[in-house]
Each structure stands twice: as structure tokens, then as C-alpha cells.
Length: 349
Image (cartoon, rainbow, N blue to C red; front, side):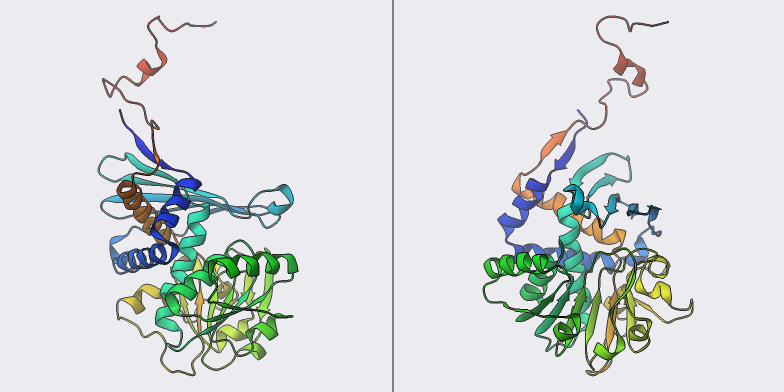
């Protein structure tokens, strides 16, 4: 039979728990860096998006010579009112030579993990090497993942939390106290208070609007800004003046110009694709006092990397289930035979 491995959210959680979140993040960053260094081998395009007044539904495809992947993902900030996650996603990894889907996986949990891993990958090249304090503005569903990734892989010793919803900060602080007891957690009364004295500032807010979470007066020399929440047309987090005073990096420029914080800037505003820094074709941080921005919108290559790691981990740990997603045919040309049983198919008039 033609079988596709299926990974549910509990399966992915089991992979992370078995490896340990530190080791999982480490492997995911390694996978991301390896794939970003193969940038030219991938068939790339901006994601396809269907926007509504309440949110967005997107399809994110990418392929190299061996594998094709896509992710279906939504972003609906009001979903908590319906008992649903803001972001829900699933993805497929397929064999290019035959088109056979080899993996069908949840990507809701995985998206949060790969987004945090991508943030760390960028920060390793863009933040000051002595960075130890991070402000985390927006304490929603992705905040724990960002805090733990930076704590485990970047040596962040203190996180300063702020959200307009105090209950979100309560939840985040409680989770971090259990998951990372060595991490100092400081609650701030405002964005400005959280940002003051921070080496890295991560913004991961959810409102679908042109916001100015960070303004130029909040920015200090040497800061690295990890802008995660501005990720679709009409949704920004950074004042244009913040971008003007910084060296700005993006994942895939054609997509970032439409969806990132740089959408508010002129078409000739200079940005640098992150893969060029990894490959040594462009400099990251040039000076200790330079302000850097990673304008992250999420790109299909990151999901390709995550799916590749999940598939390898699932095989190694013997996790997931086999799903007969595609028909198994004795005669590959006889698809109609799938409608027939031992009796002739009934024709209704």
C-alpha cells in the first residue's frame, strides 16, 4: 500500500520531549542553516494569501530537486474568542521524483518552534555577542518559544515582559518559571520600560493593523530588534524611523516587501536577505553600536527545514502513524476501479 507518515500535535510534542527542547532547537537551527546555505537550489515564491476582515489564510510552497513541501496556515487574531488558536497549520513533504507525499504533519506547534529557531539563527549573526537581556513585547502563543530558544541557544539570562493583556503575561511568566528556572523574568509596565537597557527586543504582537510598537526614541545603540509580528499586508510593528536608523535583514525580499515591516518603506529602501550573511556574501552586524533589525515574516524554507527534521526524527523514534492518503492500485491506470466493489457499481437515474 502507498502510505504517508502522519504526525499529530501529540506526536510532535513527543519528539520535542524525547529529544529535550534544547536539543530540538539545536538540531532545528542546524537544519535551517544548512538549508539556507542551499538557497540557490530552491524553487521559491512569495506565499499565496487570501485576506479577510478577520484574518488571513495562506499557502506556502517551496521545493528543491528532491523534495517539495507546502504549509497551509491561517492567522486570525480574534480566534481566542471562539476557543481557537490564532494560528493553525499543517504541512506536507513530498518526493519530487514521484509526487508521493511522504509526510503529513501538524505545523501549528511546529510553526512556533521553527519561528523561534529562525529568530535565534538570525540573532547569532546580527545581535551583539554579549547580549544577555531580551525584551519580549507581546506575550501571546509564540512568546514562550521565543524566550526559551534565546535562553537555551543565545545565553539570554533575563527577559522583560510586556503585553497589553496582563493575563497573557501571567501565563507566560508562570510557564517560564517552570520551564526555565534559571531565567530571570521581569514584568514591565510598558513597552518603553521593557525595552530600556535590553540588548535584544523581540516583538511578537497579533493585532492585524499598522501599529508602532517600537518608536525611534526607544531604540538604544547596539540593540538587535527581532520583529516577528509584522507578517502580512497592513500589519506592522515598527515605526518607519526605527528601520531608517538600522541595518535591516529579511528572509525573502519579494515576500518581505509585501508583508514585512519594510512594506511601509520606499521600494528602494535597502534590505539584506539573511542567507547572504550566512553564506559570507554580506556582513551582518558591522559595529557594536549598530542597530540591527530582522524583519521576520516567516518563509516556506523554514517549514521545509522543520518538516525535514520532523520526518527524520519520527523515523528514528518510531513515532507517528501510517496513513493511506493515496489510493493503492493494482493497475495504476484503473482509478475508476476504486469505486467498484465485488458487485457492479450501481447506476442511479
